Image 1 (cartoon, rainbow, N blue to C red):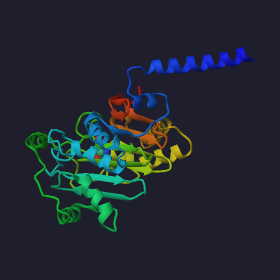
Image 2: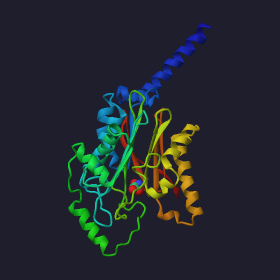
Image 3: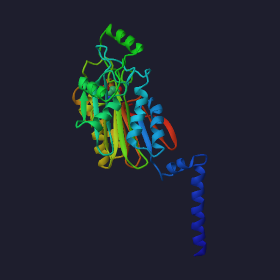
Image 4: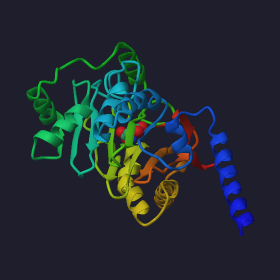
Length: 331
Ligand code: ASP
């Protein structure tokens, strides 16, 4: 009996030692994450600009800040960067040469705010948050959104940078609207986060498809399409051809699939499968379409899937910030 007890004790100590050894060199925080004892906070965002955006979000999350504040601060990084051609300031214009922005935000209480086709304001996500917090509505568009932004103290600025104007003038020579998958004439930042208190929030912001018709609105400012958060279940956000995401109410679908017990990865795969099926039914060519989803559940597990290779996303938790290539359907 004593021997057996000693054996169990020795084996237990050995396995702990092995486990700790495999986490050698990691911070205390990271060891907990790696041993699956702590998965929060965590933040995910779309595309390579997600790395820098995650850093800003992580700054808030690591100090036990609210996921809502983290996602807003995070997406403001590409929004404010004039070198980013697909989000906020510096974004490519529509076919009339106007930079029109779409954004939405959703918190752990299912509060929502959104702006669409907003011009002249560098940080549409902050306006979306003001719609959420200061109006009885959930969505403002065009001139109404601009008037509201100005009434809240946002400043009117020219968002069309020289480079984007040049590209637009070049485009005018043919005036062919043909969004090509993964050729950088679109790309949205969608960000979802789980904070240290276990609460989820998300934000999504974009200048939309380059050279779109004036007034065109994509999935990104539409709650349920480009973003959805359910604090009991999980969160999802999307990028790619917004028309296809709207067609399946993409991010709401991903969250509902997680509610049915699917992992974030499987939920993203099933939502993509839905788009694949509808595309075939509609006799459209899948090769012309790109859609990518990222998802995070309440347990801090995450996943992603897209139609074709080339989509990546950034994940930041206590083990660090990294860019991951999403798995894809068209192999
Ligand atoms: N989903 C965005 C839109 O359709 C664009 C993108 O994410 O690439 O406006």
